[in-house]
Length: 174
Image: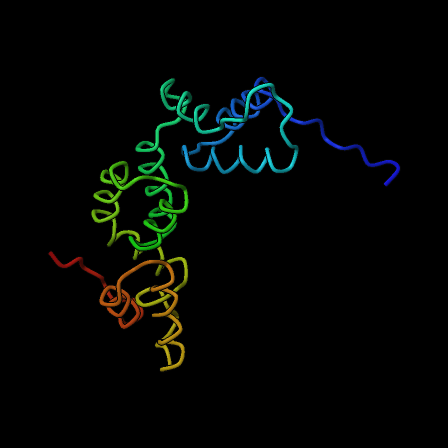
């Protein structure tokens, strides 16, 4: 380990600079910023005069509007819906990002509104149901339904899309 240099421990200024670079580069939530800062503290250690306080730093960034959990939740849910993911998958992603339930309300409403079009995108991307080349055998059908479920769609919607005949016009039920 002769050529390996240990990273310098963090202090208040270095921790703040890391946080600033992170929020400038990535759309992030308060929870994700905290996870990043805590990981950096574990990796590099702490050399500051006062104890490390990433919580206060993250709160300060929220106060400065560098971080907006509700906006992040809306952006992330729209992005996942465009990729064809359903409500359960979106909810899990937002929970993993540390988004509080109160900040997810707008995102949840948007996800419910976009459920049909997200399922359509998923079916189109996976070439299932109306986008399939031919009918599925029972084993392929079960795999297709499982893929819909993993993507976060409910069972009834998954069955409806998978059981559609190739080329069939799909109409959303009210």
